[in-house]
Image (tube, rainbow, N blue to C red; front, side):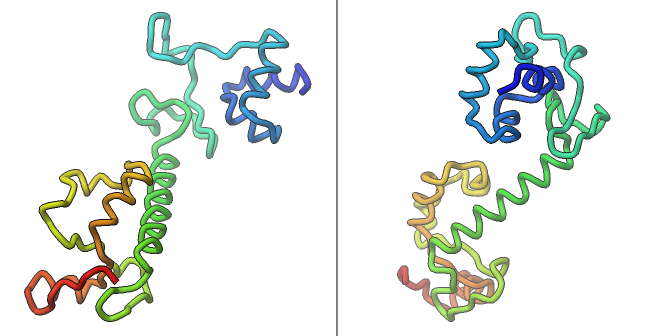
Length: 171
């Protein structure tokens, strides 16, 4: 790895992970070469010596530099990019969870639109109270919660809650 190239990326404020993606190496390899060349990253923690005015706002996704578009102490990803990433990751996790439960309604077999499928807890007493924050959970914790659920389309889900259908056992 060339010293000047690595030094320029570090000076621009890129992290070891970002540099690793650019040079197609592991972050540990980037750290090895940085140490070998005596290169250091600027201090970015919020501990003693932290001075936010010295660390510029620069979004690693889109290059935005307007401080008004960043949330709180975040300086490496702007609000719109953070929101887009969070939304995409949540959608991918939901699709993975739907696939885990068979990908179709347990009652009628509907599977045309994933947005029309709901997770129904077979026993509401076993439901985790933080279920609505599931998108921030680890996949293992999500799987544990999915074991308590069945997949129903919106119509069948409403009919189960209204008492017109009996909640089916896991298919």
